[in-house]
Each structure stands twice: as structure tokens, then as C-alpha cells.
Image (cartoon, rainbow, N blue to C red; front, side, top):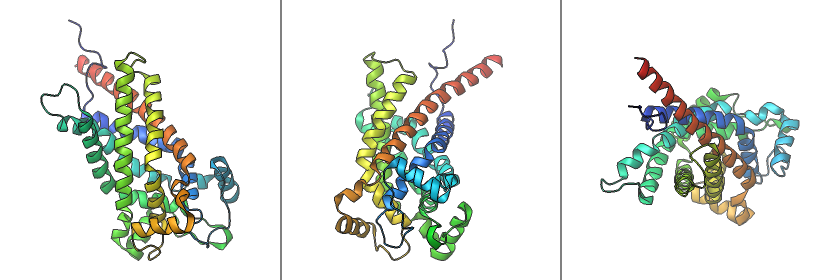
Length: 307
């Protein structure tokens, strides 16, 4: 009798969590300059006291940052970004299938849309509370500029953790949890559910095999849908997290200030780099995630056969 192939053996929870963390870190390293450009565009116009530079477009922002503050500035906050992926993406993506099975009733042969959404809500919510401090530090390091005599608030990742905790409060490391929770619930549900549905439809209708082209197309569509729905909350989250104590009294205050001062279009600032970043991040992450799961299960099966 021929034993099941690696593709027939479902990956374990540990394999999924590990694969998601590694794939997310790889995607973050490659797309981080786009994320930095997005943050700079989102905070542009927030206050009059700034570096005095106007950013225009994705490439313009990246080029301007590289010329004025050095190419390494595009990767400012990367250590916190990787810490975020390890503590955040590994859980929200790696636990998604297991939590989805939990919400699936015994008489269902395939998970319903409700089960998928419930799984996205649960894993996204849990991951935000665990990974929020890394998000706060990442955004602040990406946003700070040393031009025109502006003294950087932080000299590095761990310096940022220490200064925020000691000069503001420990709770400040969870600043912006509410908008980030809302953003990541939207992102997790839209991203994972859309990817899941698209991949299933493409394979079920025999349009594409369950391989790289299918994963790539599903990830790209999921990235666009996610960016469109999450952009307003993402901008408010970035503004609120980056603000000094007392600038905004609450998240709604931040949103209303943006609306009154800059108009509705302010909520879609940085949309293009957001999509370029999230779309490319999704493609790299999901393709690597799927391939890593397969290779790890193949390796495990080979070891089991050898023993």
C-alpha cells in the first residue's frame, strides 16, 4: 500500500504557526520600505511642526527619504516589525485553520462563511493584544525624522520600548489598541477569508491547481479587498499611535480632527503604498506559507519513514 503524500497529510498546528511566522518575516523584510512610505504619507499634514518636506507618491516618498535621511531610514523600525510578525502574524495566520475547525459544527462537511469569519475575528483579536507594543514602536520609529534640527525621540528599538514605558506609561505601549483591533479584525477577516474563498473557488472549479499561480492570484485579490476596507482605520491608527501625549483625547477625536482639517480624503492617505505593500506582502507571505507547510510536512514524513 502506498502511504499518503505530504500534500495529503494536513499540517500540524505547530507547522502552521512556524510557517506563518517565517513567511511573514520574509515578506516584511522585502516590503518594509513600502510600509515606511505609507506611514510617512499617512502622517503628512498632521501638524505644522515637521521636517518641512512634502512627500508625493510612493516612489517619490521612497526616493525623498533615501536622499534626505539615507537609504537605511527606509528600514527604520524593521526589528520591531519582525518582532510584530513573530508575535502577531504567526498567531493570526497559523491558528486560523484550527480555530475555524473549532467553530465548524459537526454536521458541516466544509466550513461555512460564518465559521471562517468567526475564526478571523478570534485570531485577529488575540494577536493584536499580544503584538500591540511592537506595532507602537514600529510606527514611531518609521515616523520620526532627524531633519531640520528635529531630535529623534528614540535611538533604537529597545530604547523606544524603554522610553515609552518610563516617560509615558506602560499602558502607552498598548496605545491605539482600539483602532488597531478594528483594523486587524477587518484585515484578518477580509484577507484570510477572501484568500480562503478565492483559493477554494479556483481549485474547485478547476481554473487553477492548488499551487503557486493559484496562491499568487488569491493573495493579490485578498490584498486589494483588504486595503480598500481597512485604509480609513489604518490612517487613524497610525496618526493616534504616533501622536505625543495630549494631542488627541481619544480615537474618535483623532478621526474628527482629521475630517475637519483635511477632509474625507485624509482617511485614504497612503492608499497606493498600502495596496502595493499589502498586495506584495500577501503574495510573498501566502506563497511562502503554502510552500513551507508542504516542505516541512515532507521532511517530517521522510523522518517518520526512516524511523
